[in-house]
Image (cartoon, rainbow, N blue to C red; front, side, top):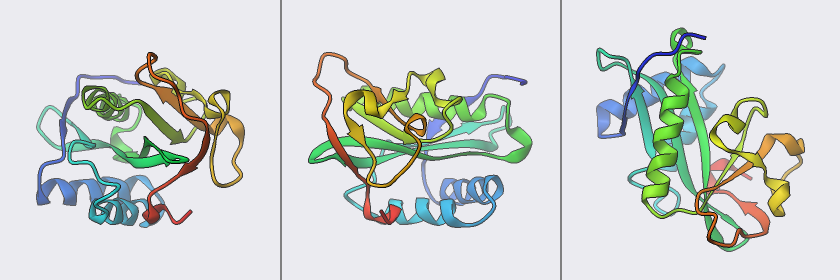
Amino acid sequence: MTTRSWHTRPEAGPDDRAAIRRINLSAFPGPLEADLVDALREDRQAWLPWSSWLAEDPDGTPAGFALLTRCHVDDVPALALGPCAVLPEQQRTGAGSAAIRAALDAARAAGEHLVLVLGHAPYYPRFGFTPASGYGIRPPFDVPDENMMALVLDPGRPVPRGTIRYAAAFGV
C-alpha cells in the first residue's frame, strides 16, 4: 500500500457532484452507488450539508469520496456511512481513508453521536468501528454480524438499541 498526503474538503457545487459520480461509476461495477448518492442528495431528511467529503490529489483532482447520511436506530438519529469510493488507479493510497476520517471528524464537530456502516469487516475497524450487535443494534435485513458495524463518537452519551432505519433511497 502506498500512502500519501491527501487534501480533504466537503462537497461544494456541481463540479464536485460530477466528480463524485465519476468516482462511484469508476469504483463500482454498475451505477447503483452513483445513483444512490444522487437520490440521497435530493432527500432533505437524509442529506446533511456537511456530510459529503472528497480526498484530492496534490493537483486538486478528486480521487476519494465518503458520504454520511441521516438514519435512525428505531427513532434515535444516527448516521450511515456510505457509499465510500476511490478511483481504481488511486486505491490503496490512503484516499479512501482520508475521506472517511474527514467525514467522521465533521460528524464529531457537528455533535453527532453514532455512525453505522455495512462494509468489509477487515477495513472499517481501523476507524474504530466494531460490530453493531455489541450495542444491540441490528440492520433491517440479514447480513453477517461482522459486516454491520458501529462507531460511537461520544462515549458520554447512551447508545441506542434497536433496528436501523435507513433513508428511503436505500430501498430497505
